[in-house]
Length: 370
Ligand SMILES: NC(=O)c1ccc[n+]([C@@H]2O[C@H](COP(=O)([O-])OP(=O)(O)OC[C@H]3O[C@@H](n4cnc5c(N)ncnc54)[C@H](OP(=O)(O)O)[C@@H]3O)[C@@H](O)[C@H]2O)c1
Image 1 (cartoon, rainbow, N blue to C red):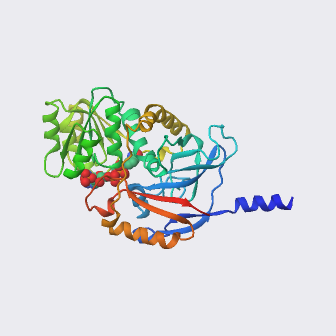
Image 2 (cartoon, helix red, strand yellow):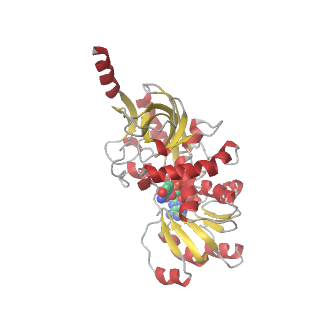
Image 3 (cartoon, rainbow, N blue to C red):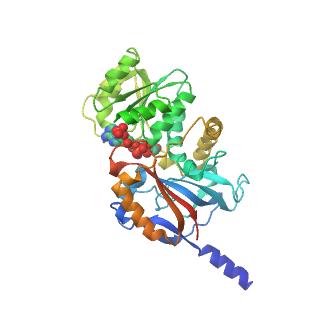
């Protein structure tokens, strides 16, 4: 009796380490904090995290510009890969202790453990490492739902993907190809355009030194594109409408250049009978049922392509060139001596430029020990 009470107390009071910040600011504010280990609630699974990613949204959150949605963990980390370490009451039996899984999260991934509604878990494709798997959920599910749930992409359609070399962009190029549609991209450097061509882009234009809308019209022989995946927003609105086809779908999922539009947007829109759609994956993460459907469909359509190595999550390591990342590494290294055996930092953007403070990168904890 005494033993079991002690055991329960110990179980519920167990602690873990998590990457944390107390006040908004730069990466120097990050440190490794000891926090309560989460317990899986009804229908939830406890995952021991082996690798997690640091996305652009995490950087914004760390700077105080993107608070987590209501009810979500305030620990950073929108995705994680690891193994099942516990099952909450009411789980369906789909998962077993030790299963290798990856998950899309509303937060909490950059910690030793995270709890996840079981519907948001996906099995890790065969022969894929935890590090590779951790780069999949956010970028690939975003691209997948933009193309299939929102854009309803059809065979033969032309899809313009802005920020083509971004995490979401590289995933979108490969998914557009899988849908037998035609990916066209914009990016800011020649190196990025080459990376997108290697991933399957049919054409690519450098938005910094050419008018992408004219180039797109030239490439499509005047008809324009059927879908635009746009994470840039305001600064692109006019060019987007120039090269969107009649009845085209303009899908906005980010506002890298802001959201304030000056000009007769509505008149231009109606003249093309075009539609604007918007999407925000993070605010949907908690809705387990829609998440479940997304993951299942993602599973069936896409899973095989990862297993057969048709698809590649993009991981790059340019750490030495990134003072900011070094700072983060340093701050975490100092703090993680007790918690982590190995520690890796990867860029998940294929970019080679020095846009340091906005880069997307992947933070991996390997072999974490309590
Ligand atoms: N709505 C959602 O559910 C959702 C989910 C995931 C991500 N997102 C958003 O999608 C965007 C891409 O995410 P990610 O993680 O894939 O990005 P990422 O890997 O960090 O890459 C973003 C790229 O966008 C380009 N860029 C940045 N500012 C720009 C500007 N003002 N004009 C044109 N291009 C600009 C840069 O590439 P160049 O060098 O080519 O300019 C940059 O490398 C972000 O805005 C992110 O917040 C939204």
